[in-house]
Length: 435
Ligand code: SAH
Ligand code: SF4
Image (cartoon, rainbow, N blue to C red; front, side, top):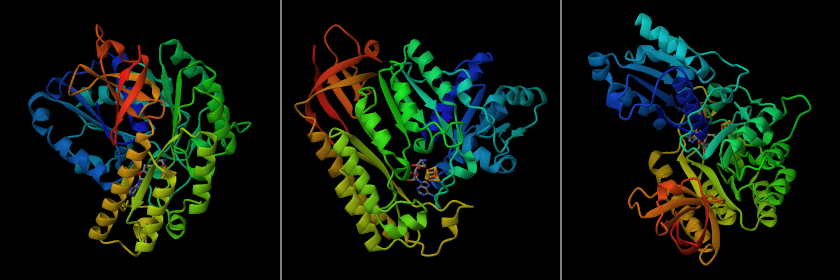
């Protein structure tokens, strides 16, 4: 399995792996050992789009020599369908974002006939969570509560490749989390392109705040969720978050731009003032909240003054982390037809200033942790040093700490421990396990 892109793709990949295992496949240790390679793709930006082509090309000789089967799923597959076979003739199976459950049959048919198979339907009511799963981290599970998106931000391809928003019935979500908790899962991440608009398409219109309250009530230790569209984050959700210790003190709240003019052209449907007022309410309810965001620079027509407004938000919001992107035109989206292309060098200069501001903000936030005791969920040993364990706080801070005497970091994976934080770096904290 090779996975590109967002958490939804990571989740789908765990389902694909689980489904294939249920059909008698086993995970190959190395690409050289594999009989089948499945790519789960992303096309949200051009860079992600390009990666697939090189990787498929590099498998050409394995295909010739030992009949390797190549399957491509995810957002590129959904977008390109049959076209993909003409561009990448080595591919055997193309399956869309709504066809995950059909993969075993498509693979079997392709292997039997030696001919390529393509299946991309435009929508389905099925959730992949009904499929088995092979969790990458046994103690963590992704739980989709809604798929697709109705927002049509003008730069974004997601609504075209993931379809309209469909919510999963509340009782299904709760039942799955109960099963997961019984199975030893400590942390769940509720997924949706916009979790805050959950339920509008369901009978009785259950709200996201109810999902959060019910999921937190299952007894699962940690509940995360992503993504929150600022226009739909309700005060009720903030209240529920603040009231339950199971809800992690971390929120991803993509701002995209600080300029009202650009926000309007992006069709984001909030202003800088409304966004910052929301951030104030969040910090007032949860002073220890960690906040992250997504920012796009170089959107068509973005001026220096527009960008200064983005910098202003980054200062004011005190972000712990930001995912920063240079605008990438996506075919078929309204923004790709807008005038006022920002020269690459200008976009790059803005990007560099933005990254520096985000780093300063992240370090300032991390310094507030020094001297505090924080509970971490251990993920395992550090890649560089097996005597150091890596874990995460509820606020999503990576923490490094020496492995306590007589234990191994591998055995502690999935365990909650208290850490005294001693030092702050930009992207992680250093500490010591409190016995
Ligand atoms: N539903 C989520 C995730 C969308 S894709 C949300 O609304 O936040 C993740 C991020 O990729 C977006 O938040 C945006 O910052 C970025 N992105 C999407 N399309 C882009 C494009 N055409 N160019 C650059 N960045 C883009
Ligand atoms: Fe894309 Fe906007 Fe939907 Fe997020 S909310 S997936 S950015 S259209």
